[in-house]
Length: 570
Ligand code: ATP
Ligand code: MG
Image (tube, rainbow, N blue to C red; front, side):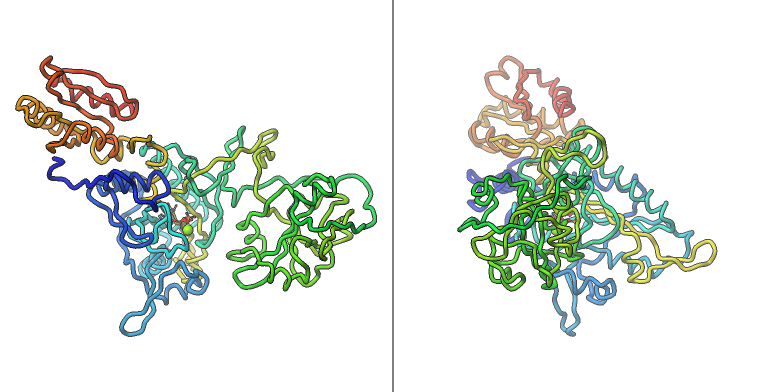
């Protein structure tokens, strides 16, 4: 490709709204342009990256025995009513009506459509297993689209769906996808981890997320420093403390705590460690129910865990007015004692506390010597808190949990029969008995993966593409376009690279060397071949490794071998 014939509208500055490196660099390198919030066009350079990424995904999906299909983006509401999700999916689902006033949505995912497709034609256990995938546009009306294509509203996803006759078969299909995903992200050259994950709105029995490790990641993952256990913090199991602390339950005692509302204030004022306090918070579920959550003073509620514990889709913190409505008490001085008309969920760590301190449900007062069996026996206990670095591993002896940030690029679920039962996708087993198919679903965010690759691979000059998805393998940079020998040598090198099956671009613009270098570093070609008057006079061209910055001088005839060496070392 010739840069004069290719469209790479690079920018000196990133738009002010761009707030992560990948978004800035995708904009500056001329890969994407924004049309509306969370809706982007992909320009030619960006599309080259996307196509290379898709090819790797396709190869591994095909190798794993999945078959490519292409389903409609627009989906009739009836299917969603059948699956039970029309009413629960909420505002992320973009709904609209056609001219006949029929309701549709723009698909945020395709469980309904694929289940409908399969139930029409598949009859027998002999037809199973099946696994279909597509790479297709989704729409989710995200409440806060951000970070460019990382969290868009319209975005491209590879989604796959497996159908099995037996549970064992379904586990094998899941495992095949786990292996394929591992192969995909390994080939992409990413530093990632597969972690146990929450199943969220898609539903199902177990799942793994594939996380690209990056400080800018929106997710936090917890991993054991000793064994293989790793999980999203929304899912990570926290070992429940075993024994209730020793000592007798002392009589309740009210203490005055004027204006002392936060854990720090109360702990400092009463000279009691935060872990001796019980924090009381009020949440509201998506169905409008109030829930009181208790954790130790030094712990925090994890909203997803809390939602799971109360079987809600979502919980949000109640505001002061709602707190008062639910408890009849002012926030800052809440406690579980006497709260009988609202559900109380306490974290497992609260169960073992003896003679703790909590709010008195009236202004400027707390209570000492609180013991759950006597003082709030109506609480149920669950794992609802955030993991902390240093917590013991729930799986192995002696392991300690650490925390890292990650970008979720892929997610695999074992769905079980949630959709096949609701939508009657059944088959006849070997005894002629009708059974629901056992399903799995498997997604990869295509644009998000490209962005995650940049988050993990860049410097202050620009992108450092993993060679497997670089838009071009190598840029040939003639420095003096008015020098015939330079242009001729550069053209020859370019032709040779192409002939040898590499994917080169030649910067044949009539521009200064500095401009070409800056653009090449910004776009992030793994190798640059610099052809300049001076070195050419000595029969040499220079090859720069974008990642290491190393430069070597070689004869033009050795360029191909040297470029291959650079790429192989990526
Ligand atoms: P998140 O928690 O980040 O919203 P999700 O759990 O809703 O993701 P899935 O339903 O599992 O995502 O979708 C599969 C994959 O699609 C994700 O792993 C991610 O790579 C990608 N994806 C999801 N939402 C978006 C989005 N808004 N923009 C870009 N990619 C997305
Ligand atoms: Mg989401």
